[in-house]
Image 1: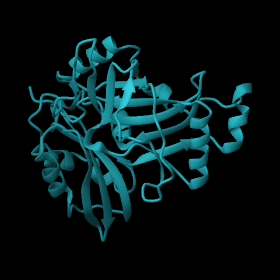
Image 2: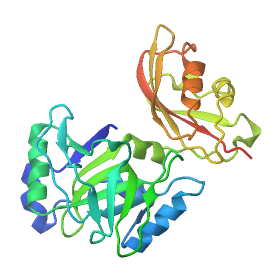
Image 3: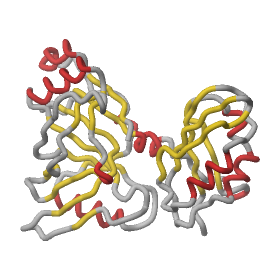
Image 4: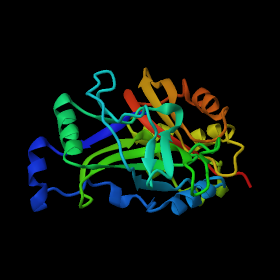
Amino acid sequence: MRLRAALVPAFALGALASGVVTAVTGRAQDVERSLGDIAALHDACREAEGPGRRALYALVVDAYGLSAYDEGLGGVPVDTRRNLPAFGGAAVLFPAGLEPMVFRGSEERGQVVHAAAESGARLRVGFFLRFDGRGRPCLLRAAVSVSTVRVDLAYLELVDAEGRVLAREDTERLRAWRDDMTLDGLAEGPPAALRVLEGPGRADLQTLAVREALAACRPEGPRPGPLVLRYRLDRGQVAEVRSALDATGDARVAGCVTASLRGRPVRGVGSGRAVVRFAPRP
């Protein structure tokens, strides 16, 4: 899962005591639920078993470690050889699919991340549960035992004692959740919609004809999640298209959507990113 860096420069670490550095912008717009105890985490796990748009949760883990800068990953990974403990060890978290948790950036920025951790910064994890609507995210235990939670990573943050953000990484999953388009008003047309998030071809892809073509790919789930696409335009058509993130809950959808778009006449040249949403079935 690709993450985007938002790191405080090294010179700024010394200014934290004077309050010069403020939190990285972006989180304020997320309606997230900060989990303060194990009971709240258990409630979130139970809620995730039902249908509906996934909620964004966040908590500060009890302890974490950082590995050395990894050139292959392009940043500093969180050590996930052991699950991340939370709430005094009453729960442990691990990333779904064992995806890496990485603060990406240059080696210089990696040094900033390590310096923040060494100064006592805490690791805050933003996550979804059952983002794609499949599987069971939690194994809940009694208070005297340990609950295990499989999280769909939304973001990582290193925060100081006052809660100021020293480093942040957003995942593609979080960006898809933010860009989740409202389907109100689509009942009168095809139950599918495509929004170009970045790149060329907007005028030819955000059309009724495309919506009609994608309607045949409608998932079976009661409230399907988003499908994020990467595409490339060349020689007047969609030359390449692939799924970058599939939270529809229906394994056939991505193949259907990419087949519907590949070869479609589109003006423009270059690569882009789009999100496809479907209205729930009645």
